[in-house]
Length: 124
View 1 (tube, rainbow, N blue to C red):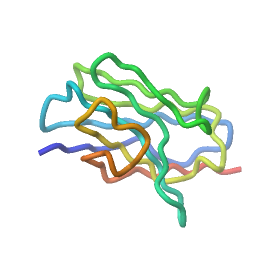
View 2 (cartoon, rainbow, N blue to C red):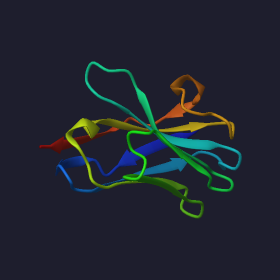
View 3 (cartoon, rainbow, N blue to C red):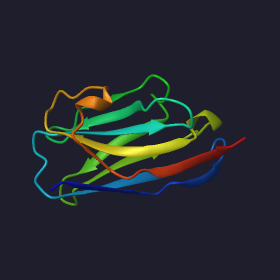
View 4 (tube, one colour):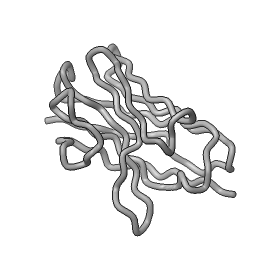
């Protein structure tokens, strides 16, 4: 059984930084895609960033490109999201997700496993 546990959320002022972490357990993740999504109140869940566990290639939503960086630590089975230059519109619950394919893309429905989420609030 795959488990994903996020941490690192909190309250930060606009322009600040936060680092989210996701600890993945339950299997080896070779061949998986790992991603971060977010969901603000009243809005649909949206893609933020993804990384291939094998090889480490990454992809980002246009709204976060240049500000957020996704990475993974194979030895520690963790995926991180470094968020810089945060804006109030980044406020959301952030979810870690895993898909048993290297081509999961940006659609939430293609991801098989989800964490419980961590709240990020950016004040203006």
